[in-house]
Length: 81
Ligand SMILES: [Zn+2]
Image (tube, rainbow, N blue to C red):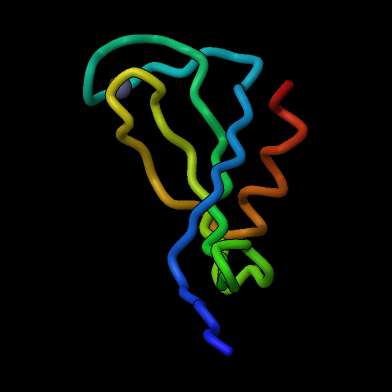
């Protein structure tokens, strides 16, 4: 039986902040995204096990931003829609 597996399939869960944030990179003020990026272990191209989760907040216009810890992420979730 041929088993095809891999790591690297990523899913993105983005939420918009309710309040606008000024971006020092592109100088726009917009509603930033609170982002959760999950990397999956997949079997037969189906994601089965999350192997890594990264958190961050980023500007939706220039995609610059910063990484967050899980604690920081969870403390900011209630500032989003
Ligand atoms: Zn920006």
